[in-house]
Image (tube, rainbow, N blue to C red; front, side, top):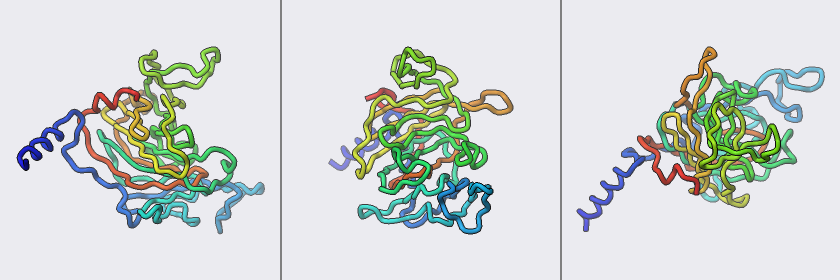
Length: 285
């Protein structure tokens, strides 16, 4: 029996896309070691002592790197386990210090209750950005150049281009009659090249607010797959960006979790290397 068990484990390790290495946790459950924080310009409704404002009350400067006067990023206990609470009060991102390439990322999230201006009366919003490169704040003053798997109520798994990154994707217009219709991912639809805007996921698999969701991203070469609660919702190819006017592959970078006006909790953040994306993952489910 023991020999048979060992043989089965060895075979499992050789399955397509399987990683021989253990999962690497990116959150140690105690503090934010391995991460850095960035906060952009606060909304005028936020009180940040000593920060410069113009005559209309608008902040003139970002809060900056590893400065968090309002406690936007904190380690807490949620449902009996350690988690990272992102308050959302000031927009910005929590960023890994390490870069990753050819990997499978997995994390859990659930929504809190608090919302802040300017999105205090709309759906709760956050996001996970991958292949993050360049300067903090390149995207809208708050995020690095990157690809986003959306974390937003009813929109989990959508793609957003941050600071102009490009993808190819099989997609159809949400409204075929509209010239500038939103795009929806559809397996087998004509492939659109050089997309630098939102692409809506295949279907909604988010759990009700208050429950934990598991999101995953498979990144291999210039391909990325978004998975929500075990269901593949979006496949992107041709991941790239422009450097000195030329399109070049963008296949590695850091990972960010957004602060964007909504209280959100993240836990069980982990990553492992891959050499192949399983065929079952490449198909919407």
